Image 1 (cartoon, rainbow, N blue to C red):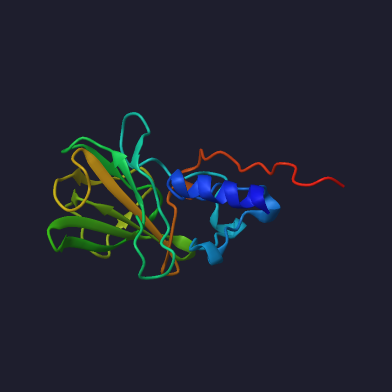
Image 2: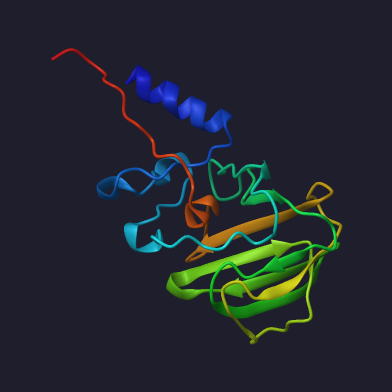
Length: 181
């Protein structure tokens, strides 16, 4: 039990990002504020990274303790202002416009997945289809995202999940021996 508590604390200190586990136990615990992600939602072919260049997360996903709790419901990725943003997967544009002080674009994908990108200026409109890798806009400025960053959020059936689960490349969690006999 002590080891599990320590591992949970380390995961929270490292951004709270759930790590994919072996296929038989891939879902994360809803009790810890993380939306479960069944096997059928974790693709063997990861989503395409939304920007060119080195794949770097500047602010990690932090799941809130409850629906209205503080957290960071997505990841901020390094992206130069004016840089191209591409669709991570096939879908339909659900929203394009300004929310409060920042332009954003939302895409509805298969299996109840919805991705949001901000700040992004885009010529696309709600209802436009997009393909994986298609240019969907340019990194803009504004909002809470640090300069030269793009915020990427993903919801599955209305619940926020760690986008890195879909982009792949996360290390698998390893269980350590706990007790004698």
